[in-house]
Image 1 (tube, rainbow, N blue to C red):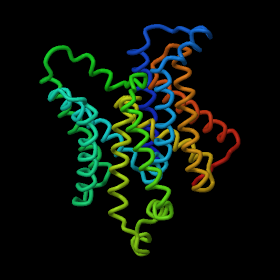
Image 2 (cartoon, one colour):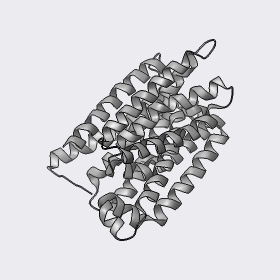
Image 3 (cartoon, one colour):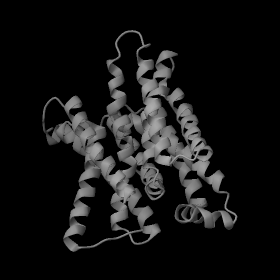
Length: 308
């Protein structure tokens, strides 16, 4: 019950974040003409955004399925919020923030997991403490940035249209690494998700699998921030998996639906943002949210309750 209440709170926060982001990024409501829209698709930046959105949809669906079942939504939220530190550090030392964000996300994720293992505190308490501390440090560090700091607002809201070739390569490499790890150890991952104690008895290296998964998840959060921003990165991982969970009876079906919904929402969200001149990241999350609400309403009408 507590998990479902926490998930509901996350979804509600995502709605608020989407609304705030639209207010910040969309000064007016406009529908692009069909000719202008088709010409927009011919621009390289739009093609990169669509390719990046599809790749991240696959990646988010793949890892988001385990995030939801293992109740790690607070973990991805903590990494996303604390990632502000990694971004600001890059600005302060005058390097591409991506190259400071990636190692910081890994270090932060592993540190949080180690802290959970070394204390008797509940995991959600540790996640909350780490998130608050990381965000506070990040905000304080921004005061050391000389000159105009308004461009840091893009970190909160994201801009998938700003994805470049380097970002695409990073996303593709991370997707390949994640797919190889998850699919080659799928039986162990399912066992770890459903019954960690049994997995340990059967000789599965529980700690190794947990730490590798946390590294991949931390990197996924880091690369997704550029697309959807700190405020919405957790929703990007959790909502498609939550929708798939409502529709699935078996784990293989659940995993497949997570990926399909991730890709579909990314593609439709990007096309919608181009058509209606909305912010791209929030448009993707809004499509995910509408799919979730639609499926939930449909199941309520049918009186169906599906669980993986």
